[in-house]
Length: 229
Image 1 (cartoon, one colour):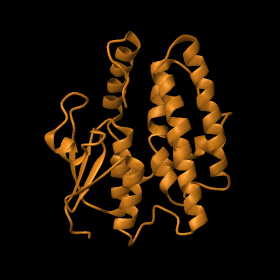
Image 2 (image 1 turned 30 degrees about the horizontal axis):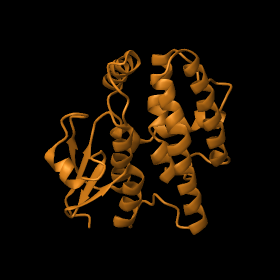
Image 3 (image 1 turned 60 degrees about the horizontal axis):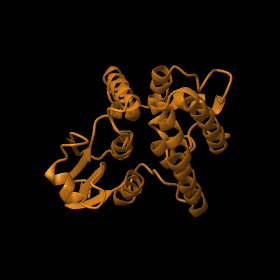
């Protein structure tokens, strides 16, 4: 399957598309990246391959489309089963990985986004919610370098946008979520994760991403732009 043509429909600043790229890079899979002009100029191909949600990311492999980043990452691990393992082989550990990935998606992501586009009292409440969700997430890091153990695994990929995006969001919102004294396991994971070569290759340019997030946040807070994932 290594010779099959692979396409990824994404958007350069999307943390969800990042998950797909990182999984492919860890697996050593070559792919063509189609950068979508979102939200108003979605390509005909994207709408063709994902007519249900019409969202990125979409992976196209053997002319068959797979949507939703959590599903895509699991598909990549199974479709290219040799070599690097993303999901644990043990059924219980695999179930735990899915549990924590869902926690990241259902708890961490919404609270971080609240910090991104809220202000005033709502912003301060959102900061506390992020800290609480990350404190809970630390439970899955006890005794580990990465959520996957000694190497990046499924949960690392799903949560992997947080180390890069969160510090930008802190700066943009002028709040402090992480410090040297709190969440030590999360802080250590941030540093270890961002030091991985495949991660460095997948991340978008920092200055460009910061400017994009700054302008988008200003438009959301002013009401000029409605937040939509």
